[in-house]
Length: 561
Image (tube, rainbow, N blue to C red; front, side, top):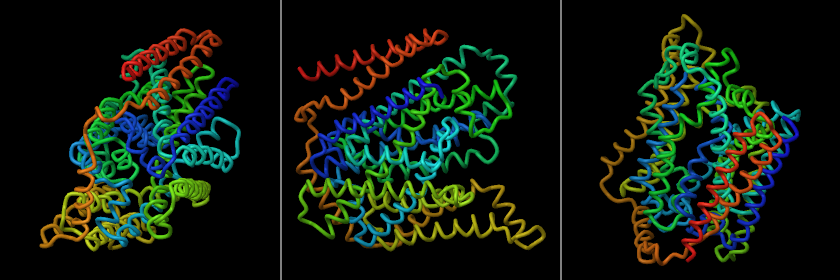
């Protein structure tokens, strides 16, 4: 990277801390720290949920699939949009009207202390392992661009995310997610325009494989896509980082709108996000598919904007990491520290405790990321375990949101049964090196290996749902937890109003977007004045962002009258 690239990256990181500092001024209570005081605008929560799906793995994994298989990657990412729309219609409003401050509070009401402990510690381990791989992938990308030790790269970026999350709470997470969305959109749009402008489409079609424009290929068939939608319906509908967004808005209607925005974005934008590696395949063949995205960006981006590209990749991972840190710090503060150790804790004490837990969890996350390369290929092990846990853990929680019959025994039975069977098939048979050719289990091992995605859908998606249907039919009485949830929901209904007129307009989120647009636009114009070859496109982007900022300023003035 060049000097302007380093300056761009430094300015971006400084911007994150400015937003975090401004957000910290609003964080006076644990409700502000972990649910934004239920005053987040629906568009901020929707964009934040959208960005939470991103990470460095988005560019490495899906960019690699796009480069290798083409539009299969687009089809897979579109599944997120379908899942988010379904979650918005069936689930988002239901979460908001419960009257709970954290999703863990619902789990405790519905499944008791045993359910809270089981779900919290299982999910905490799962998310730390999963997110640590994303942080490691980000550090690998950084080391490829900057001569830097991998361990120090992990510590550097892990520390940045921990500090701004610890300081500003959920407001910092929401506002930096919006900043990250702006940066990511600007950079990817610029890469796509620059690549398309110098490309002959007829030559491109001849250069890519015949299957390149098919939505399914190989192990990524229609059954896999069905399973992928189902998995992410339960993830978006029940994973705490997404539920937190439904709880952060004012009322159930805005919770649904936030999820609809998330879903519509993922229906219409996957092709846009994946254009760089898709187009790069028509230009260069035979590169490492995991590096296709960054190589495509490097091939066209002018000096100074490559730093913004890395900032975008950092943004994607930071969004995921900060979301998980905030939600689990909230659980440990509100549902463990306050509930079990200090029920009379003041708001100041709870905020301070929340920041301590954010720091503690951040340290564990950085340590896990450092250990990833020392595990010798453990990334695949971690990712496999994560995929086997999603529906078995989330489905009972989401089921309990609507059903009054299932209880803690059913929740644990579904999770452990599905996970154990999946673990046995994945590592006891299909990946067992002791099963050699010619043995009685060889054909079974081969079949499982060749149909791994379909098997994961059957065991990780279909089986837990069938088990829940079985328990639903078998149980005759109502679980006590359902009664506790109903009482809390009834209490919240008497206190809550859906009247938007009674809620004063909060200009803070819109102003954060306005300032971000102005700064990024100004920097684009400065880079354009320096770069002769890319001057027109850089200045055009800068002017476009300035015009957009002016439109937001008019909206703010209109609402303040």
